Length: 216
Image (cartoon, rainbow, N blue to C red; front, side, top):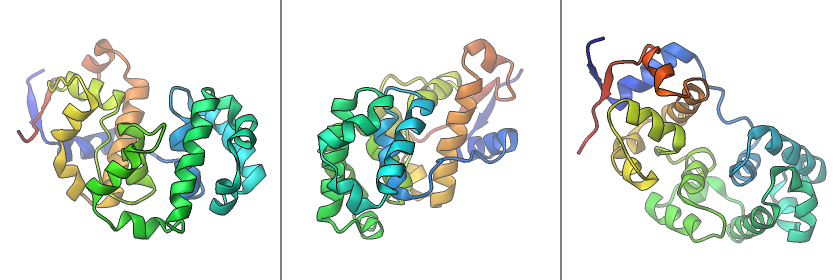
C-alpha cells in the first residue's frame, strides 16, 4: 500500500470515521473522573469500576465528602483497584488540594495550563499522564495525552518515540483544538489501541501505510 501523509487532525477524523464516537470518559461527574484517573493507574477498568461503586455508595462523589475521607477510610473502598496505599494517599492529597481551591474546577482550569500541570505533578501519585488526563477531562484544558496506546500507534505511523514527554512535545497543536475534539482524539486512540494490538494487526488495518506528519 502506498504511503499517505496525514496530520494529527486528519488522523483524528480517520479514527472517528473508522470507530464512531469513543464514549470517553465513562463517568457521571468530573469529580468521579478525577478519582478514576488516580485509580486506573496500573490496573484495568473492571477493577476501577468496583472501587468507584464503593465510593459512590459512600460519598455520591460529593467533593466535600470525598475530601473528608481519611486514608484509612479510603483503603477498603478502593482496594479492588490495587496499589491502594499509594492511590489512597494520592486521593487524599488531590482532594485536599481541590478543597483549598473551593472545588472550583472551572476557575482552576481557567488558569495557565503550564502552571496547573506543574501543580498537579507536585502532588503525590500524579505523573504526566494522570496530570494531563485531569487537565483534559476535569479542568477542560485541551492537551494531548501521549500514553502507551498513542506511542505505539505513532510508532506504527513512523513517528517513533521513547518517552511520554518526547511525544507530547511534538503535538503542541492539540492544545488549540476545541475541547471536545481533544477529548475525543484521546478516546479514539485508546479505543483503536485496544483492538489493534500488534504491528501485524496494524498492517491489516485501514491506517496501514500512513505516515503521520508532525511539527518539528
